[in-house]
Structures are given as structure tokens and as C-alpha cells.
Amino acid sequence: MNVSIAFKTIVTKEIYRFIRIWPQTLLPPAITTTLYFLIFGKLIGDRIGTINGASYMDYIVPGIILMSVISHSYANVVSSFYSTKFQRNIEELLVAPVPNWVILSGYISGGIIRGLLVGMVVALISLLFADFAVHNLAIALTTAVLTATLFSLAGFINAILAESFDDISIIPNFVLTPLSYLGGVFYSVDMLPPIWQTISMGNPILYMVNAFRYGLIGVSDIDIQLTFMITAGFIVTLTLFSLYLLHKGIGIKN
Image (cartoon, rainbow, N blue to C red; front, side, top):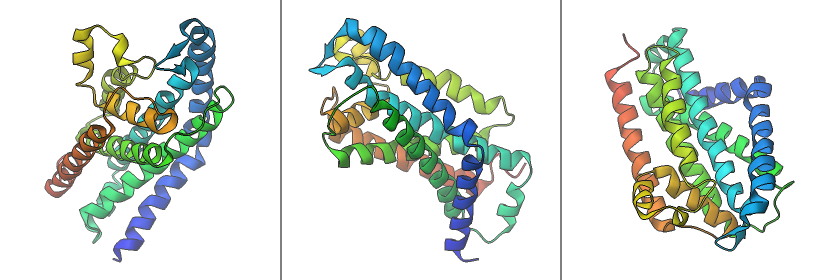
């Protein structure tokens, strides 16, 4: 089988899957984002004032956009691949002459596209509440793509190892959500006591949020080069681990 055809088929299926049910995949983040901006940006933001020279509304916009990218790139892959396992459709991929890297890249691409699309929707909504000029578009786009890639890979691994639908909800509820809210989305890490600043440095989402914030409004608590190095390291590690799981058939050949 031509690998390009296999790749395009998987990606097309993934895109059609979440576009077909857009009221469940694209509409909810738009509503949630509007509530974030109304509650945190308008009601609370007027009392906080500015952070690092930026208005509170402008400060939280990048983090909220990236939170949407993270959650939806992860959710797309974990739900899609686990459904393929659950419905036994994975057997069709296993018997077809499709390399593991093509299977992985196809599902990851679907997650990246959904994450970035949702991020665009959230960004358009943010224009109704915030008014700022993009500081560095290249850094913002690079951070968004790398972040979507990383969490798509994490979703893929979760889907492979999951043994029930309950297993695919544990990580988003008990890991991703806490890390996202504690990742500097709504506050600067400099506002925390020293001990919590040190603990926060162990949260990878903090680095991605700050890099994306720098790209949009030019404000960051973290060195941007360090962010790219950490994110790239995670991506390489999770990619190799995902290919290992596919090669060994762990979780999919039982």
C-alpha cells in the first residue's frame, strides 16, 4: 500500500470524524471560552488591573487559547484511537501493509488539526474581549503546533494503554485539567510564594503557556528557548514510546 494514500486516508477520516459532530467538538469550547472571558476577564480582571504591563484580559487570552488546543488535541486522539480498538477496527490496520509510523502520524495529525482549529475559534472569540497586536506570530504558531503534537501523542499513548472508556477520562480529569489551571494561565508565576514557584517549574504546561503568551503579547516568565527544548524532548520521547507500543502490540493485540 502506498504510504501517502494510507496517511491521507487516516487523516481524512479523523478530520471528517470531528467535523461531522461539530456541535460536540467545536461549539462547546466557544461557549466555555466566552464564560472564561466574561467571568475572569471582565468581572475579576477589572479588580486585578495589569500583570507584567499587560491588562489582565490580554494576559489570560493566550493561556485560554492554548488550554483549548491542549484539551482538544488530546481528546481527539484518545477517543478516536480507543474507539477503533473497542470496535475492533484496529485489526484492519494491523493486517494492512501500513507502517506503524504512518498509523501514528495519521492519528496525531488529526489531533493537531482539531486542536489548532479549536484554538482558532477561541482566538476569534477573544478578539471580542481583548485588543492586542501579535508580538511574534512565528513563535506563537510554533508553540501551538508543538503543544498540539505533544498532547496528541499523550492521547495516543493513553488510548493504547486504556482498557475501558473510564481509563481514557482519568488523565484529562486528574492530570491535564489540574496542570492546565496551575500552568500560569490565570496568573504570573512571579505572584506565587518561592516554594510554589519552584514546584510550578516542574509543570511542562507552564512553559508552553508562557511561550505562547510571549508570541501573542510579548510577556513571559520563562525562557523561550528552554520551552522549545523541553517540548521537543517530550515529543521525541513520546513518539519513540508510541512506536514501541505499536511495534510490540501492547494494548492492541490482546
